Length: 395
Image (cartoon, rainbow, N blue to C red; front, side, top):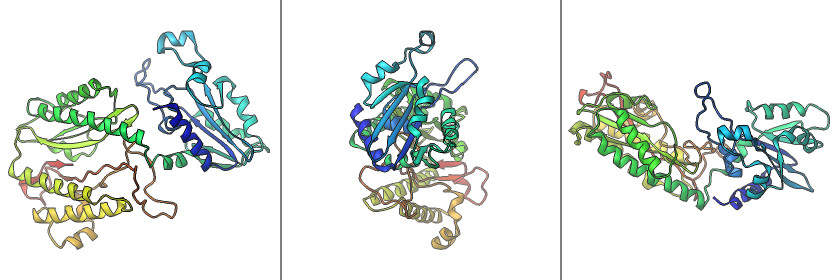
């Protein structure tokens, strides 16, 4: 996205800050195996406000009655480091590329931040950060002239992220389009493959082929009873003709996530019992999607999904009794233990709030992005359920 978009977000953040200083730091490389690192992934809130994909960067917001100023600190180019990891943009490159009021070398941060913090009332930072820079800055505030009120900056930014811009929605749509193609190819592969890993590889090939460099989360390719482990990621079991395969996978396209779950039979045809469960969950999903409109809440969708799935389970003999009483006693939780969906954006589970400032459920508005994924999970050893349904998980 264009730099002006990130600049506008920074200006919006200033409106939410009082007299004070805000600090956000970039993500760090994470070691995978001694001398190697995982692929770098920027911290989501930092990216949202900057569009920067490098490590060892710091953003500072300074605000009082007279000034609103942004600082970007970046690591300078090091020839030896560049040989191994590639060339950095450095201060000069950052000035050309990004619209910050002042761009400085990270080596200057410690001295500069002391001057910026003086006589400020509040420090906004990640209160739960293990980052050395954040910890050292907080310790700096022990002197008399420094801020004494600390506020979590992530909570503020995550609230901003709740409503997506048109540009963000287009990126999410592209991620979903790539993921849809990958799921279609994976469903075909399910009927030919010998193992879950072959299906997982098909997904990743389609992601990469279409410019989605990373997965939004680890693929879940769960055959048979493995689907009853909600976050199953072993993906190493063999496939049997009698099984269903639950595929929960999504790519990340230009930092924006997708998330799709579908279920298909290894044989190419559902058994009658599998079809009954599948169509019951599908009916619930379509009904919940039809309810979505401005001013409704996720809480209402959750309650409706629980009622509908309980009705379905009673009709199939999975649960027995009065639907209202079963829901009240949470008997459905045994087979439907999770929520109807979650916010999605830069993170597959965007950490934006579900409750407003009065602790009431957030009402839907244009620009919010929510997954809808009802499910039913019946363990192979659950003798309370008719045998024909055991060992099946559908989401």
